Image (cartoon, rainbow, N blue to C red; front, top):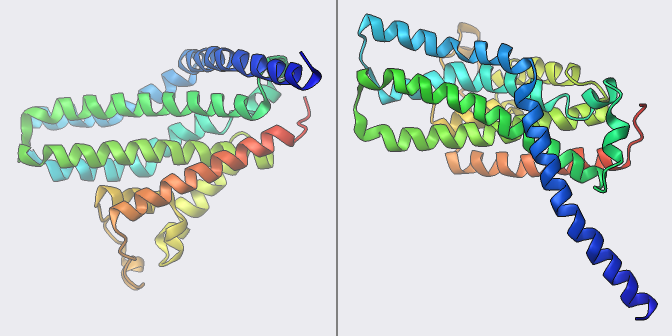
Length: 268
């Protein structure tokens, strides 16, 4: 076997060893996400819509499917989903550095960008799982009072699309911001305040907000304040365009975060 063939064989063997290592790493990270104390805190927070749903059930109020979509637009999309994503996506790398465990991650025979990708997948899966369980329980409690079940299919499809893409977009964004600025939560909190609650209310600039595109996917129009009524109307965007925008944005953010984590030298 010549030198070139030997290098090819070694590269193939190394690549074959990475896949099982990355899979095992992903499983460990997902298990760690579920075991952390923040699960209890976020779980209690995610129970609030369920408690409101039980209160409505006791009251006996019947609601249409469109109101469930509105509940997702008012409660989950602008508040609960980004909050859970922030607490799981922001600390992807920085938390390991703060806990002095980042050096142990580098011992694994897996490139840094794959470590970032594995932790991001685990954070996204945990965020989606917690949010989805809360939403399913919320819908389950409301189901005896729901009117217009013929709209259930389209409504659930829009909710599932919005939650899935919203989870990926928010987690990718917060992880990329943390990789750039080296702060687990600060950059994400500033983005949430400035873009999601500030710029998202301004015409044209609202296109930079994840929440804006999630609203378009849900086909949900939030009520406008007196100040907002003095501004031009919000831009109309088709749901499929917002879906495409969030997909592209997520891929770009994941690539940025992975490249930065691959080449940046963090202080451990």
